[in-house]
Length: 252
Image (cartoon, rainbow, N blue to C red; front, side, top):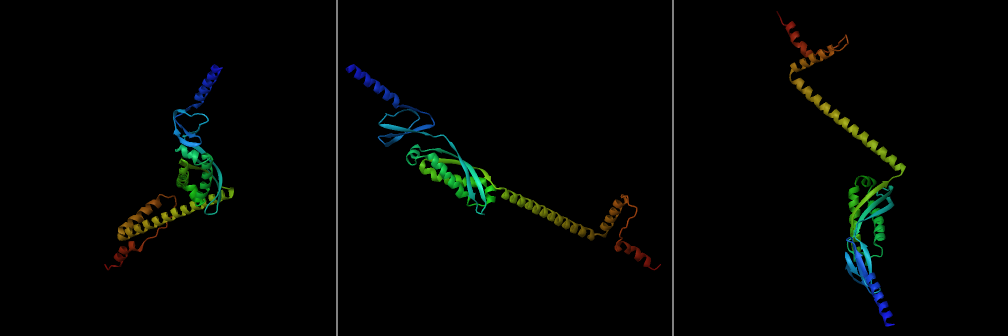
């Protein structure tokens, strides 16, 4: 009888030892509780956790990719858009992640949704479309600060899509077309201004020396002579005839 008891005790002890052995991978940690009280964080490697007396909760320290579903956001200029994002985070303090919050992943997801709506709602639509990097940094900073008490580190936030309705898309297209037209008119006006300035400079240069005007007239006659037209009407400036008039009017 005593032999059976010893065998049973030995088997029970062997089962307890086998169940007490836990192996944690390099990216895992174990939060151990003894009789319900926090007893420390262990790992990686071989960990002994005695059944009934102790319990261990495994925690994965690898980066987790959280997909934030589409959120209805109203911008500061009262434009309704749908925005989704992706959040990269990881647990850096396992005991806080287990003790301070019941479900760290769900808590981070809900916080990311509300923070995304709050931050984007403070900006106009143009800022959402052109300044994503700054908005990503703002959301990441707020999330990282809020989740620090849970032992979570938010490393990066990326806004994926900003969906607009058809009416807003057409309005943006019209605005872009108007902007292109405005820029074209400005460029044309700048060209006219520069051309006028060059003409004024050329006129001053020609007016400084009468011979320059004569050379310009001769060049123009040469260019017109190469044309197919048979009749050329060319204005003759009075200044060119002045020497001849004086010569004819002089007494012999």
